[in-house]
Every structure is written in structure tokens, then in C-alpha cells.
Image 1: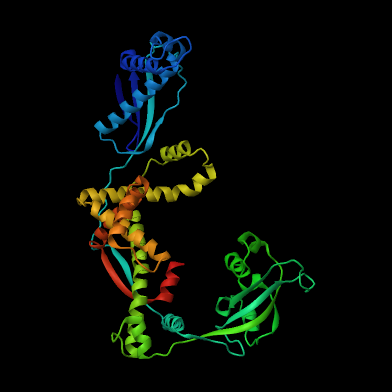
Image 2: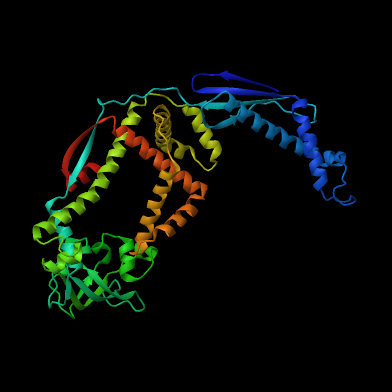
Length: 448
């Protein structure tokens, strides 16, 4: 067997594999004998089918399989031995040559390879990235305090509805002429005024008393939010999307959640006995809680900005035409339009992967199993807490984590996430982080 490489350019190569009968014949003979031992053919006892009979019946297909296996093994070994950094997978190069597959052919196969570029990427303190320290806007802080006070407040039933109240009401579907639609949609539900999107409709729901009746354009009220409309009317989302009827709203009761008093009993319920004793201390604790949540948003933006910086500094090319062919070959449902629209993002992600690997290699960064395990454990813990306020015990959570990581796909995903975080942490230690304070509202504008 002879394997040679023709380098087209720094990013593309063609590997030629020349296979002679003496290369594949031993494999074919062994495969035929193995098949003969297992074959069940009428007229022959099990395990006694002559190999010559198998060769006559299945020889050509066995030859094709074994040549393909030999090709795959030889190509992979060659790539490993030559330490070629291949992107995607080798693609067989089409040619017009035909073979008889008669056990005496010399075969020549050509494979196109897309090669990873050689590159250097230098990060230094001259690279500046903004790190935002997000402070709650006064309105945000006030809204959070109101929500917490209401969570520990008491329910009252005022005579007249005001903004922020909840109307416990009957909703009945109307016909286009305004009459009740017989057999139509009806439901008794709670209508939260703070969720009504349309200002004009919200205004019409303020000042209502028990027994009052109004007409509600439900699509306009909730800005055609099918999920919310479906929940209010207890119908499926598809029906909610197509629904165009008005509804008759009859108030059965007005509910108002009064805010809890800012007293020691309230502070102790929130933070534990004696930890907070003043309104100022309460506001400080809530501010810290909000800032901790905002810190996660800030870190996500910082990571994204470091990613963008890395891509901008990555002044290297990819074997784009090869990669486009490879994407089409490996996904026959991918249209030319989808490929054209999605290739830029694919290329950026591939560049980031190459940058990650180079940073890891050049700086001898290790990714330990303990780190992957801890990340997976934290992920599972967060998921369980979404469904149960009572956290799992450490031993049980560890058992779930072991089971989770036994799934190769899930384990690889967590590994890649840990690798990305370690690379980003390394970049944070090199570049200059310019810390800037900003309110959450201003920060939200940056994200648009």
C-alpha cells in the first residue's frame, strides 16, 4: 500500500491511497471464512458452508466492505501519524474511474482534506474589555421591594378595583354582534391588572365593582400573547392564537394584596431573627440580592465580549469551500440558502474552538474530572431546585451526577462548557478589564 499527500495550499490537501490485492486479500479471505462459519444456507450444515460458496454468493459485497474498512483504517492512521489537524472529515474525491471488483484490482482512492490553519493569537494588557458593574435603577429596586412586601402581605377585598389589583371574574365569549356566543369559550379566572399590556384596556378595568360587566378585547389586552391568553381561558395555544372574539367580563370579586409592614416580624421572616433591624438595612440586603443577580448578566456579557475580541484578533482563514461541501455532504437536508445564511456563524464557532484549543495547549491549562463533575452537579442542583424548594442531599445529588455523566453526549457538553469558562477566565487574567458602573436599565439598552 502506498499513501501520499498533495498539499494544494496551507488549508487544503489531497491524500491518495493506492491499494494492491496483497493489501486487502488477507482481510477478504478472513471475512469470507468468518461468514462461512456463521452462514445458514439450505443444503449445508451450520458452520460447514464452503468458503468458495460464500465467495461466489457474497464475495463482491464482502470485498467492497473490506476495502472500505481498510481505507478508513489507513486514512485515520495516516492522519494520526502525520499529525494533520483536520477540520470536518475527509471527503472522497469524485473521479470517473470504475473498478471490476474482481479480487485482482489495484485501487486508487483520493480524499480531500480541510486543514486547520497555523496561527498565533496574542492577548495582552493592551486589549481592553469593559466589565459592567450593574446597579439597580431606583424603579427596579422599588418594584422588587413592592413584590417582596406583597409576597408576605395579606389579601383584602376592596369595593373598587385599582391598578395592581386582581379581578376574579367570569369570561364568556361573545359573537360578532355582541351577544353571548352559545357553546363558546367560558372560564372563571383571575385577571391580573399588572399583566394587561394595553393601557386603554387597563384603564377600563380600573374602578370596577363586584357585579360590573365590561367587554374585553383579549388579544389587544395581552398584545396577542397566545401563551398567556391560553392560560387565562384554559384553551390550547393554537386556539388562542387564532381567537378573534371579544369576551364579556363579569367581576365576581376584587382582590388586592396589601404590602407587608416594614417591621421586625417581616425582617425576621426574610433574613432570620435579628439579622436586619432597620428599613435601611432591609433596602441594603435587597440591593445586594439584585446586584448578585445582575452580576451574572454582567459576566455573560463580559464572556461574550471576550469571545468577540478573540474572533476579531483571529486573523486566519478557514478552508471555507471544503467546509461548505462537508456540511452539505453530512446533512443532505441542508439547503443552499440555509448554508449561505448559517455558514458565517458556523465559521465563527469553529474559529473560537481553534482559539480555545490553542489557549489550552499554549498555557498548559488542565481540565480535571473534578471540575466537570462539579459543573454537572451544580447544573442538576439548579434544575432540581426549579421543581422543589427542598434541595437534594449531597449524596443523592452526587449519585444523580454520576448517572448524568455516564451519558457521553451530556458529559461532552459539560466538558466543553468547563473548557470555555477556563479559557475565558484565562483571558480575563490577561486583558485589561475597564470596570464601569451602569444601571440595569442602561445595561438592558446595551443588550438590544
